[in-house]
Amino acid sequence: MRDPGRTLPLKPRKMLTLDSLKGKQVLFVMMPFAEGFADVWQGAIERAATEAGYMPVRVDMLTSSSRITDDIVTMIRRSSAVLADVTGNNPNVMLELGYSLALRKVCVIITQSEDYLFFDIKDIRAVIYEPTWRGIESLHSELLVFLQGTTPDRRRKREGVIYPACVDTR
Image: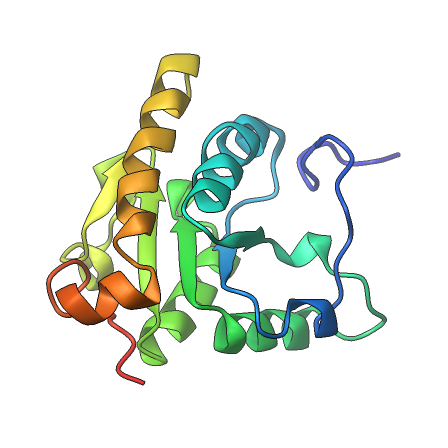
């Protein structure tokens, strides 16, 4: 029997390979794979990322016979920016966010409550959202502004202003 809390029920999407993402401006998204987050992904993250010029990618979109952990590490290293939904303090999301911060990646953090912003990430600007239709529309709008500020050209102009704790210094 399938565990509904393990995967997001999503509309059909194209599957990707790591090679197909080379040279693209990828936003790697780290979020819980639970039913309650499908609207957050489709209604806010995927739309805002695409409108900002990013290709939004989650690890479950990759097709390969490699280890999932290896794919996550590769995607974090190759991505132009990362987005983490820390709602619920999912241990996998928190580990991946920590690794992204250690690499000084551009990080966008979203959450349904400030209570999920622990000490180590509390000083990074985050978008707080409500898991309602209105909340997801608002998240979409706020994410679009955040993401437009992280594109490489804009990041050079505003480096150190938007995400001082995790600006990529490459």
